[in-house]
Image (cartoon, rainbow, N blue to C red; front, side, top):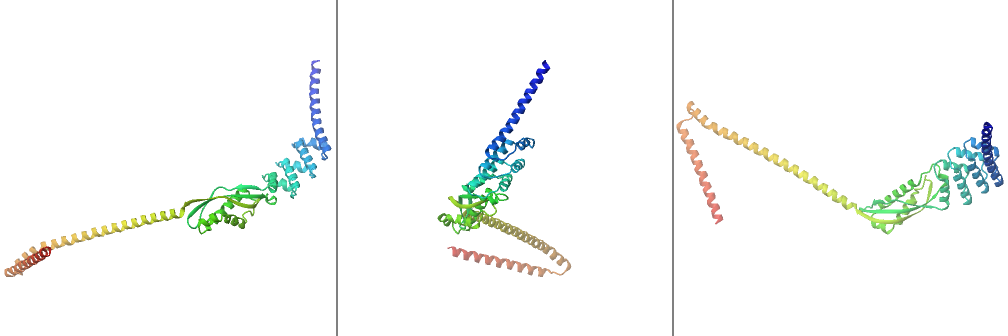
Length: 329
C-alpha cells in the first residue's frame, strides 16, 4: 500500500509538471495566434531545446507584427543565439519606421552585434544629441593662451554605425579644430571678438567624415584668456642666454688667467737664466786672468766704465725725481 501511495504521488507531480509545461507553451501559442503572429506550437516547444527563450521570441514577434513588420521567427532566434538583444532591435525597427527612417532588420541586427545601442542611434537620428568637449587650451601667434569649451550637436548616421568612429573621435577632431583656429590667429583678441571662427573652421574641415555621427552645429560655450606663454618663453630664453654668456665669460677669464700664469712662469725662467749667466761672469773673468786674455788695465777700464754708467744712472734718477717734485709743487 505504501508503495502505491508513493507511485501516485510521483505520478501526480509528473502530471502537474507536464500540465504546467504544456499549458505555458499553449498559452504562448494562443497569445501569438490571437495577435496575428504565426508561430507554431511545435516550434515554440522546440525553442526550449534550442536554448532560446520562447517568451522573448514570441513577444518580439508580436511587437513586430503589431507594428506592421513581418520578421521571420528564425531570424529572431538566430540573432538571439548570436548574442544580440532581440527586444532592442525590434524596438529600434519600430522607432525607425515611425520616424520614416529606412532601417532593415539585417542592418539593425548588425549594428546591435557590433556593440552599439541601435535604439539609441535611432533616437539620436530623430532627436540630435549635444556633446560638450573638455577644456581645450591653445596659444595664438601673439603668445597669449586661450581656453575654449564647445558644445557639439550631432546626429547619428545609421549607414555608418557599423565601422564608423564614435563620439570620442568627434571630440578629438573638434579639439584639433579649436587648436588649429586659435593657433593660426594673429592675435588672441581676434578670436575673442569672433568666436564663431572656431565653428566655421571645424565645420569647413568636415571632421565628421568616417564617423558614426553627423555634426549639425558647433557652439562655443566659453572662451577664457590663459597665461602669456610667449612672454614666459622669451623670459626663459633670455635667462638661458644669460647663463650661456656667463659661462663663456668665465671660460675666457679662466683662459686669461692661465695665459698670465704661463707668462709669469716664462719671465721667471728667463730671470733665472739671466742670474745664472751673471753668475758665470766672475768665473769667466778669473779664467781670462789666468789665461792672460785679460790684463789688469783692461780690468780697471771695465770697472771705470761700470762706475761711470752707474753714476749716470743715479744722476738721471735724481733729475727725474726733481722734475716730479717740481710738478707736484
